[in-house]
Length: 104
Image 1 (cartoon, rainbow, N blue to C red):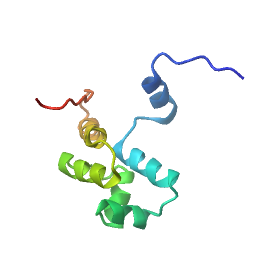
Image 2: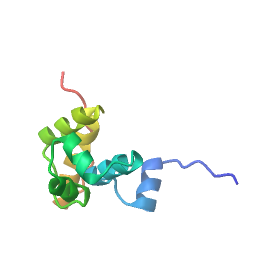
Image 3: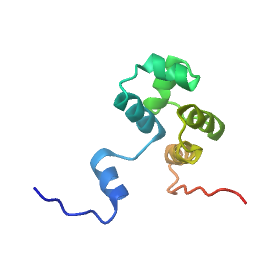
């Protein structure tokens, strides 16, 4: 089976799975590593309930908290900060895309 390459992978994935959110990203990481909600929450310095709320989109972390979570996971903080800000804009029904760059 051959597949035709997609011109815009982000749009394709969003159409197929929905918008990428911070919660979806964290849940995907957790499930890929087969880690329990409790263990992952402890690794992030969060309560189990708080992590559950983030994964389900009921809470959106501040950029500062997103940064701390990124450091705990040893991934670039830009990724989680951008997702947190995008989630906040989406929740406010503001049609903008977030793109971060390091301040000089």
